[in-house]
Image (cartoon, rainbow, N blue to C red; front, top):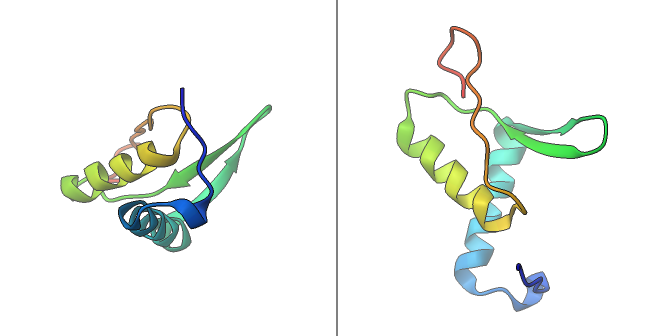
Length: 78
């Protein structure tokens, strides 16, 4: 069970993680719409495995479910 804590009560590490996630969203992300829900989509270059892993880790800090990874056709996109 996740406990919700107001942002003003977050530890400094959590604030830094949120800022990083916001930067990813503003740079290469968007909110995807689906029939009954929304999802955060962030595009990454699969050749940069450390970036993909870091992105997944920070999303998992805030998401209600584990982050899903999806390859984009015959590209390096993840």
